[in-house]
Length: 305
Image (cartoon, rainbow, N blue to C red; front, side):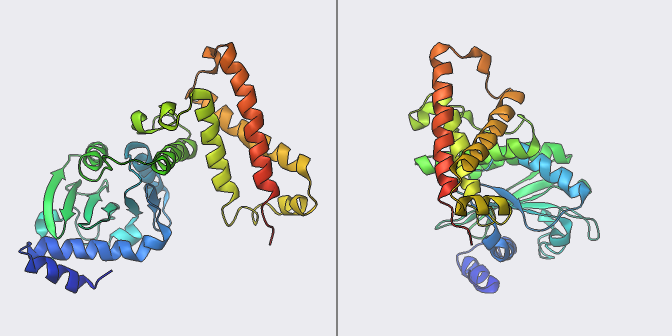
């Protein structure tokens, strides 16, 4: 990323307000520090949180729906306290010095980077958000409390940084997985989602029905977990079984993981299995066994270190 002053100067030369130009450049510089730990389409904390911040972070995960085109960083007060607008830009100052700040910064990168900075702290005198693009302040929204701010933030994300077209299959996969990961982490179905863009809710997006869509979700999630760098390190017994080519152990482990996820779907009433007809019940058993075999194969082909 370009030096803050260089980037701000370029925007100022384009007749942008120096206050917003410097503030956006500063926000992007902060994000640049944490970018290696962020993933597009996911809201991630950049540092550890205390109990109060963890509760707020859960509210953010449940209420704010991001898409595969953006990075989103949750900044607890140990980081956010140091991020204040220039003295000349008091209109975007939302919390008094010395009060614990919590911010969510969302970046849609591109030819013209667009960024949302939201102050979410319950101690903010003016909770709200500001939207910038190419050094210009596009708009500000103020709210009376944090809950209203989160609701407004979700609307702002949809209006200002949403991927409005050209959703590829990978985008749909990522978006649906992100939704389900939040559901799983929060253990609630009350998670913001655009059902028209989730293949779990709209399986025809991937030329599937609701049963095959369910097991596609299960496979993608578990395959992602199995191929994570730390998976085998956290499962030393599995490494031994893979080396011993213990196919039955791997199949049983995959079956257990599948059952855990299907049970979660059932317990949270995400899908009504009692509503299945005979054809769907047969498809459920067939897809379960197929997914179990695919995941057993994935486990068997992991490479212990």
